[in-house]
Length: 575
Ligand code: B12
Ligand code: SF4
Picture 1 (cartoon, rainbow, N blue to C red):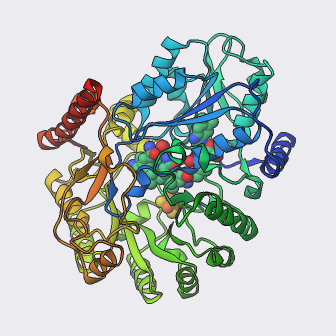
Picture 2 (tube, protein in one colour):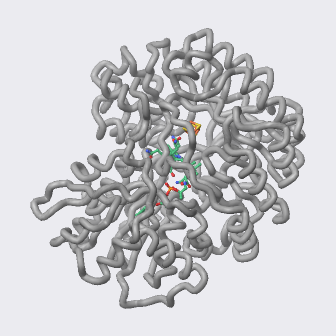
Picture 3 (cartoon, protein in one colour):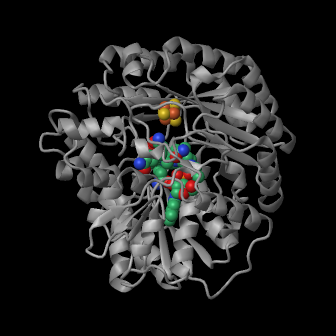
């Protein structure tokens, strides 16, 4: 395997004079935002749908505003641009609704890209180009960062913003407002770092990397009122996604990081932000999506001191190797509920090959210490990492069946930009990049999913392992599901309540009956037309035999989910 997953150019500091200038601009505009300037181009940001399911207790994620889109729109609105977010994550006709919204008043379109929404963004951009050929389209986010060449070759994206986007979007929009670039003249984009675009001959070109912000304290406070949900009858949900840091010190073979270098806000900055979120938006619960919340002990303890006085409930993600009694006790003290750990697997060689920096003993120690601190442990596992065997899967299942404290299991996903992805392409498990990106749009994180089998293990064994682990889920931290539950579809009701702690926990949060008897996971409906993308239709030629794992059973399951979605849209259109 290659020695490093991610492109080396992602590891750069944003520290030129221009970066410094925009850092100051963001700071000043946070204190005193510019007044809305109607002469400036109107910027619309589209947040597309995802087929991804959320286990019971985590449904708030399906509708929660998220950070990337919030920061991009906040820096622009603070600079006086008219900004709208169109969020079609819970629409039955996402493409139609997004297009109609865009055409209602947009000069420049921004599109958020993720590994599971490639067909959506590609088709939406084609629709926009047909209806409004002069509208520049700027893409940003994890997917375009991982495969910018695909966006330049196979989509109507005009400008791709790579990695962290706050400074780049400000600079790109400033040049556009001044008439210095447009669809017929992209020369001036040469001075913007961190972008891909097409030159006068239509050839894809890119500038040197922007790099990451040296100082996250220059970021503005998030303007969550820019999300349509804030203006809905129900108002903004009290659970939000936030972070104090970006990046991760590790480099696991299956993981993609859009902003990989470690950077953190100061405790004072976080304190100010939490005060703002509570006061302005009534935030009660935070999912801290820092990749490794407890990475650096002194820093973590300082951050916990800042969180504690805000009287919030929260959860976070971290590594088993990065916790000890002092940190966990302080986390409990500061309001933490469940701590999510990237366990992935228990097998020694598997973890080594994945460059995980973890062992079974470290996991068991973290689990014990988490319980001793009075916190809940939430394991995150992968079925089918390279090197997994029937025995190692059996061991993983037994461990979980004894503990039943799992938060999420997934089949190995070949995420663009990672070692697992490039290996899959080299070995022919993935037919091609575009085909794979299309296929990823039907992965739901359910045991019924199709998957790419990197070990050639029997399909039935992998499915059985997934199902056993899935049945070991512990309740998520928010049992209320109030924002449009009727827009989602429900999977795998399960009367088994897990261990006593799970039952007790669910009861404490207004779930007196069996907490997942209704459903174990919820997801949006699949996008109509997704049935084009099953492995049988677009996978590698022999993916049903070697490497791949589409069976007629899996395909039938996927197709039935998609039929339900098509039916929903037909009903909605008839109305
Ligand atoms: C929080 C989180 C979630 C949340 C919220 C998702 C979200 N859409 O933000 C939930 C739980 C819902 C989620 C779900 C999934 N996630 Co997720 N998630 C994350 C996580 C941990 C943090 C994201 C974050 O908020 N970062 C902080 C913000 C500031 O950074 P950012 O989002 O990258 O945004 C910056 C730039 O990308 C850019 N930018 C972003 N959008 C735009 C738009 C424009 C126009 C511009 C100019 C710039 C721009 O500027 C932003 C500010 O600097 C990241 C890991 C990571 N740290 O990146 C994974 C990550 C983004 N998720 C990932 C995946 C795969 C998923 C899932 C598909 C599930 C899965 N199969 O594992 C689903 C569906 C995602 C979706 N379609 O929304 C991958 C994406 C890989 C890829 N190549 O696309 C990542 C990188 C994690 C990983 N290592 O696997 N996720
Ligand atoms: S430790 Fe977690 S976030 Fe960091 S590279 Fe590994 S899987 Fe990704």
